[in-house]
Amino acid sequence: MVGTENLKRIIDQICRDKGIDRTLLVDAIEEAVRSAVRKKYGSRRDIEVQFSEDLGEIEVFQYRTVVDDVFDEETEISLEDARRLDSEIELDDDLGEKMDNIADLGRIAAQSAKQVIIHRMRDAERDVIYDMFRDREGTIVNGIVQRFERGNMVINLGRTDAILPRDGQIPKRSFKQGDRIRAFLQEVRHESRDAQLVLSRTCNEFLVKLFEVEVPEIAEGIVKIMGASREPGFRAKIAVSSIESDVDPVGACVGLKGSRVQNVVQELQGERIDIVPWSPDPAKYVYNALAPAEVSMVIVDEDRKSLLVVVPDDQLSLAIGRQGQNVRLASRLLGWRIDVKSEQRYANMENPAYKTLTVIEGVDEGMADRLFAAGITSSALLAALDEEKLMDIVRVDKEKAAAILERAALVPVPEGIEEAVNCEPAVEMKPETAMPAEENSAEQAVQVVEESGLNLSVTGDAESGESDGETP
Image (cartoon, rainbow, N blue to C red; front, top):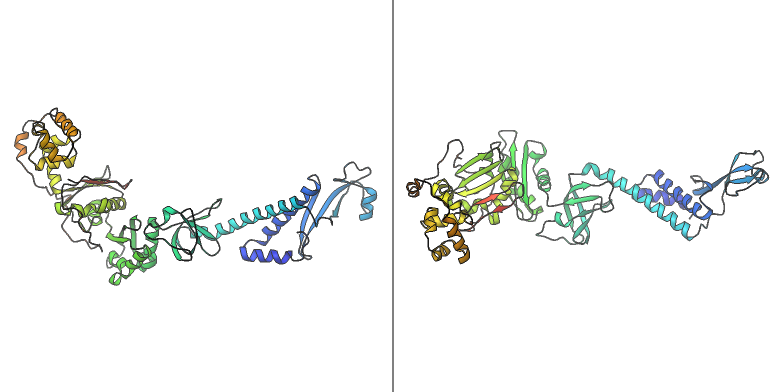
């Protein structure tokens, strides 16, 4: 282990392959030998270990104090013995003596030296990796799928491996060993027992960076991506704006015959991407974000950061999307809570008779819509309804129907409600909040309307991304 003639060559090769500073490796070897010598000869000895560049070997020196009478051979040496080594030595001087019998330090000492070297090399290599990748955090990296560990994917980036966790993988496609892959470098850790580099293909930033690569106008700063939201592998929305009036931000992202956006779609394994124009006006912004659905009216509540969006009855399913996906993505894109209602439901909500139904415990808006459509236009009329008839209208069991009828009888009907019952107000288009029926310039994929039924109310939560809906 010590004094090997090939040691210098081995050190040079390791430093080349691992990119470790030579001084750090030499220090690690010296520390390892020092630890091994002390394990074999005792920790009380004053030991100095040096790597000789000329000889290409490790030299170990033991220092002892010159005394007349020796009481501790590990730290003291007699004057007579010292004079044999150095004729000019004097009492109380420290004499350094090269130790020549350390070629065989024993199994335990050698194992200790090995552990020290491995530990120091890992620390040095960790520092090298951190310095190499810390400036690349937040960028796209290319690698090769190395192996799989408990659902996580290990990606070889050349000098080191990175981890692509299960939740960072797009669910629609699985890679196999040896495949080339691109991912977003999400985190570079300095101190970590696990992987130092953490990748992601599901974060919004990956989508943004892909467009920066594909669209020169974004890289140059002419077109800006103002927001992005994704449901990885299924659908995504990005909002874009331009600092130059003659540059169409949506057209720049789409590219000639859709070439630019298609490159991104292919990288995201078929994820549908809606590109919408950004607007500082939340009403206009949500109008664009909910496309291809048409919007009749938007009511803005800036204090609560919520939007009430009214759409034509036949556009409700399109605005909400499959399992609430369209409105949920729009809500995340804006960072606002979005409540989507059909024109019919909005008109019902403006009717005071309708409100006497919605205040009944156990009657939600979906039930109230069905009751209203069946001519049950107040809590008083509901209380007088036959139990079997109620079960048929709102499709509930007998026990729940009885409870609803009992609660309806307790709800008072305000005076003048009869006059309001026969009034069916149309949706009032308020000039300050109504949106023009203009065609959205975004490149949108047409979504098939899932349901033909109306009277569906969905709320998209900007924070949780959840939606609550009831199908009549």
